[in-house]
Length: 620
Image 1 (cartoon, rainbow, N blue to C red):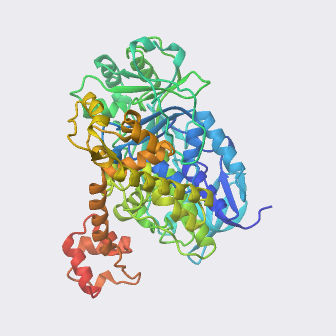
Image 2 (image 1 turned 180 degrees about the horizontal axis):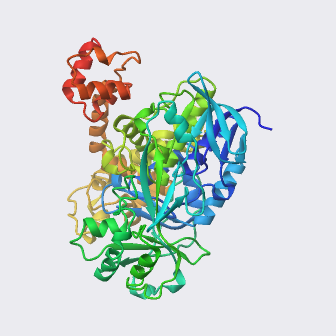
Image 3 (image 1 turned 30 degrees about the vertical axis):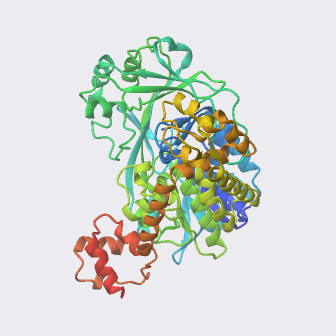
């Protein structure tokens, strides 16, 4: 019934979809196995993509040839560029999406991907022999062989759903948990643990009084996520802001004795940066209100997502508390919020390619590695799919460095430091964020991906054209002189100091209160010189000119730190012989087996003197 595949991907969430698409687009015969074909790329929690640092990741996925950016743009109902008041390194795109349309567009793109097959079944075990994974076993009794396998099980491994004092097996509400895989891998020497996440109640938007809330419209200009010419929405839906109050908090506290979190029925650690509402009012007892984002679930539905009200309290407590929010007095609840507890495998058990250290040709991606968020899952899936394909045809894996992408930061953090709580990406985790901006992901990554065989030559040509345009714009601005009478009236309108003699346009652009778009729109000579260039190229040239000093300093730092990254540690290196290392350092080095001295230096518990000892023993 089944042929032998090059790559099998288990799970069709965000990680699984990107993994399957990448492997198939690179030429591998690929099978995507999911327990339910109707929930491919399901947005299990918030119907939104992007945000702080997460938006950078989606743009990187797109630059590498993944699908998440395109699908997001096709299903966007509201777009906002966050942190516009800060420097470009902090700008982060975010989209509110149509939940059903997101799923449909993902499925449509996957079904149109050559070399990708689908099968609906539960994977209950892996085919393993001689330290290699060569396929999967399904609940219907099939053994399907493959050269590489990618596990992207999300929250389904022995998942338990909690609502108040009730709990039942499930990977999501109304979907059964996956069993068998954890137990088999533990028997093969893997370490597993439990994590927890949660989701808020969904409510009927017709029952809300929006006049009592603050409207949050989208941006007038939608730049979107994909570097392709994917159509952007011509209109947008507003979100709304509401607040809890002391009455809401008192109602919620009345149910704390029945909370699975406070009663100790949940063992797993929850996400620090997306806590439940009961956790928030417990930890921040001094606050008399918490902000809630009231977010529509799509174009053609009345269903509303109450962002900020994640909870696992009993349904009646949730309902009573919601009714005490201003504007929610007559609220109708579609379904309650809940918590879910599930198995994950500490990611220090992986190599940089996301292949497991214990079993060759077996890759992990997404929440199975302890991450939280669609974007974090999707980028892992992309890299796991790329490397599963390369393993299937006996090619060396490819790895993104910390200085090349947020994706590189995320994977390095996971395998070097591990995680004891759901890992979420922030801009602060990246030491080179001036280089890793959302606006230049295509310039950083597309040529790399073309070399790997994933991104198309069409994308390569587009990047080449953008680079040429940016250089041409910079050349014009460095050469173009502006007379005082051409710019002073405009500068004074900005309350900026006028110029006394002619200056190059580039020098005027260096002023913090001057943008290139405004300069072009207000000074005819500049506007005429730049009218043939795209808005994207103009913005890129402006950023490069304004932040040239900072960008160059960061490049120098990358070069200095690269010295440690280039010092590879042999796989056979015997840490046990280093008597001068402390016990903690020795144990962690033996467990993680860092690939380079740079990675060793980032392992928690390894200090600079330990790195120096390693350098001595390596003859450095």
